[in-house]
Image (tube, rainbow over all chains, first blue to last red; front, side, top):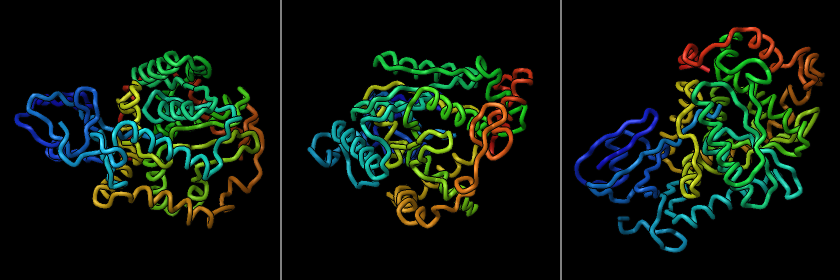
Length: 65
Length: 322
């Protein structure tokens, strides 16, 4: 699957299917500070991502200054 | 494809988000309903707003400020926006575009103030000229201009998009230092007084993950990129620490901050020196201040006399400290 990451913007190509939570864990990203979007729609942590999905992992933390 | 069991707690439709602190999943409609309910609860509990108020929302182009503007309009409040051009290079240019687009698409009034055009400086230059970390120079500038714009425009309440994570992180920092002065002032409502407008934070019951989700579900485009000058500040480190605790014990952030408001803030009422000492008018702009010149005028005086400093030159100066 194609995975778009932000801050900084970059793309990863991963093989095989996995859950959203497993994807975040494999990238060492905290669930509380990220959302996962598949084809423009949010998906929860236990959603299964298919091998041909295009997903964005969006960080949600801001500086709050 | 959504895994079996991942259904909305309310209607059993496929869920779009899991909220561990509520031990529940929600579909889009019921997630939005939850957010609205949390905002109404905050507004009512702390007497933040009435439908007669003229509301000014401080808008940055980020998720929180656009979300709170959107929610308040949905709830029937009269709310205009205020955008301050901080001159932080491309970041500020892009953030302004998101704020303008939101207002334009909804036919809303957005007041714009440019630090560089109207006061002769920008945040990178202020940081360099005053030897302050960028977040400090930025905060002093924004707070002053928020107050001034609200009072000049006849608005009765100024709204900011501070969310539960923001407030919990500030509380965490204040508690680590046992800073009673700041702790006693960390309230979701600051009443109007001595030349200050009433200021409220309707998002204190919602996390930034929930606010980002609100924007995605509502189709609101916002600036996802982080402010380059905030990278590495202590505030972000406190958020990361609290999120590590939240991961192990969902609901901890809400309990930490909301129980502070219920149980601790009343004990600290009246302990603020700024609240109890008399204020005088700034010799330059007339704003209330404890000294002869307010913090904004001191920053503006030094920064406007300084040659403009590109943002790249001050990046990294604030990292690791704040």
